[in-house]
Amino acid sequence: MAATGSSPLLNLVETSSGLTVRLDTTPVLGYQDGRTGRKPYLHPLCAPDGTVLTDDAPADHPHHHGAWIAHHLVTCASGQWDFYLERGGEREGKQVQTTLVLLQTSGPRVAFQARHAWISPRGDTPVTAHWHVTVQLFSSAMLAVDWAIALATHEPCTFSPTNESALPLIRPIPALTARGGASMWNSRGQRNENQTFGRPAEWVAVSGTIANSAYGIALLDHPGNSYAPQPWFTRDYGPFGPHFSYFSEPLVVPPWRPLLLRYRLLLYGGSTEQAGIQEVWQNYAIASQLGIASLER
Image 1: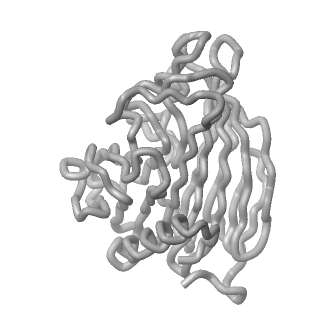
Image 2: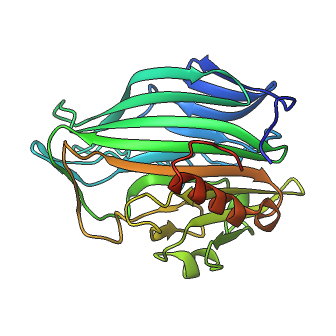
């Protein structure tokens, strides 16, 4: 059941690096606006009790950040640019926040919008990313984040197939990876990288043990997304996300048709089975087909 008026309240507050969502006084979600790096991202992402579930700049892939949006091969009139890696290459662009709007700062749900300019090394902005993020407590053990992303272009831009793409990607902490002893499942009952990589699914979830308690992260693909149900990029060492841009032909995004992507991210205590991810996805899919904007579980 969704949170009621008597449930603890969420609060959205500005920080020196972006935003923080608190459940009463417990931080449960961070938005990093990118001013100290190359891109904005969501981190930390936490269970309702404050347990951190995502990793930020791990040693093996320092360009991985919690939950993020990026792409390595973006071709426009001025050239082909990289908005994914952070190695200082001559083709590397950056994502800069240009607008931040706090839509709802306190209550059973909070929400904000942000606009990011993808700036190439030549100084032009071939892509603009628009984020709409809503956070709600579904239960005492589950936090839901609805994340809508629109990628708009000023000229036709091509997103070429590459494994270095995050539309989006999630990087969990080591305890929530298969290599760390956790389990990864998708909606089709397939498990871990060898069964889920490149396979279409409505959702993927990882769950494992942190300090002797079970926790998990699930990412749900909106049925209205391009190529849904999308094939997924999954790795036993951590990152996972829907990845049509790797397993398909090059995608051209024209100025008159922005690419809209919608997802629901679940952060929970307990196992994937206990969390009832399939039921949450079914309600999410039904509500979207009926045009209902509700976040009810």
